[in-house]
Length: 202
Image (cartoon, rainbow, N blue to C red; front, side, top):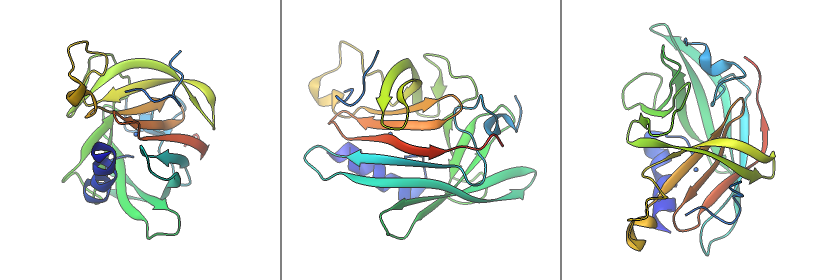
C-alpha cells in the first residue's frame, strides 16, 4: 500500500495532481489550450472533480479538487486548486499551462518546483517529466460509465519482463478529453475514480 500512500503524501509536498489495473477499471496550441473542450485537463475557476478512493485493505473515502481562483504572473495564469478530504483543511497548489498547452502543477503561483501533468496531445511513448504516456484505455467510472482515457504511468505496466516486486510500484493516472483527470491507480490495488465533476468551457 506504500506507493498509493506515498502518492497522497506527495501531493501535500509538491502539489502534483491526485491517480496493476484494478477491477474497477474496465479496460475495453496555445496558452488557452487547457481551457477548451479538447483539453485533457480543462482549467477554469469553478471546475471541480470528486473521487471515490480506496487502498488495499483500507477504508473508502472521498476527495474533491476544486479550482477556486486564479491570478496572472509574468503573463501566465495560475489557477488555485484546493484538494479536500472530508472536512480536513484543504491542500493548496496551483495549475498552469505553458505555450505548448502542457499542464503543470506547482506548490505556489510560479514555475519553481512545477511538475508536468499532461500534454496538449498525448502520444503513446511520449515522456511527460518522469512519466510516460502508455496509451488509451476504456475505463468505467461512476460519473461517466465507460470513457476513453489516456493512461500516464511511471513505467509500462504491460512490460512482460516486470518482476512482481517491480509491478507493485506501478502508478497510473487517467485523463479524458474535455473532462480532465478521471482516475488514478497503483500496483497494489489502490485507486481513485471520478464520481462527480463540473467543467466549464472556459
